[in-house]
Image (cartoon, rainbow, N blue to C red; front, top):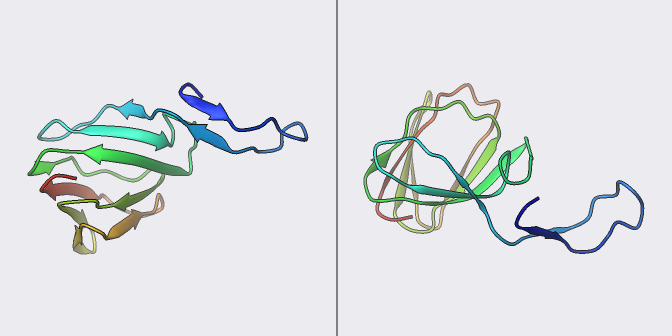
Length: 117
């Protein structure tokens, strides 16, 4: 992985070892206003097809197109408010709260925000 360091060599061939992520990968985004997504773990950075862990920096009042999660997406709101539209209804996630969207969710999910994240 570019921008990462294996902490120690495996004691046995093929054995998993801890990996220190030095820099995230910048992910291209769609939506109404420019935002920055920096992926630490996921398809682009680590080739992981099961999870996405990234930092999102966005302007106030952004909206992105509806999506069907391809991986489990864990979101922690550091500041501001995140609005998530699902088939089941509207969820408001505030600073200090979190939400997970599972890849098997029948979606679509639409994310929008107010305030800086």
